[in-house]
Image 1 (cartoon, rainbow, N blue to C red):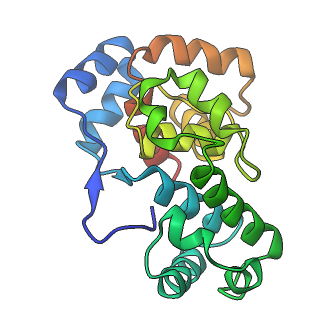
Image 2: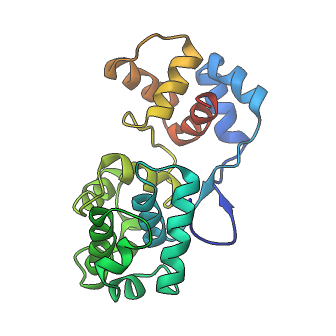
Image 3: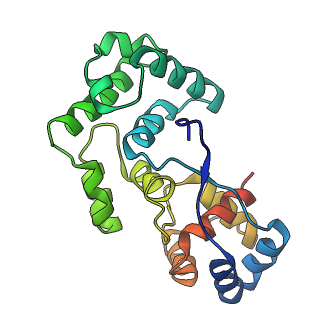
Length: 205
């Protein structure tokens, strides 16, 4: 994630690791080999959303540059600060006009109550995805990444994430991966799909 100076990581322990090792010995061998993985998170949902929009379809280095320009322009990545900016000024930070519209739109939606970001903590994973997907520029994949990297939900495995699919194919020596086979692995990893995701990302590198 691009926001914040104090780096925080997804919180998991030997409990989840041992469960997954017992549920899937093939994954278990990789868990033993890799050990604990530090996966960065951003607890501030608004910051995480803006970071996600900025990062879409550009390199991490470029995204960091654009995010820092936006931070310098606004003074802080908050709905009030971003909501005061003109779309044209946001765009000049180094992004497309469409992205600038998404970013200001998210800020306005938060300010006018169209979406209650603080209330997402009370919702189920499916409800969070449904609420976030109402925002322009936020689809199912972005919402799933927010579930992991902001809300720290324990049971998220995204079929739409290329890295996760690549990691799964590498782990099991698969040439292709159907949605039905993916769902079988999801059932196997339940209720700790997020920790499985973290290791699959490592295996996709």
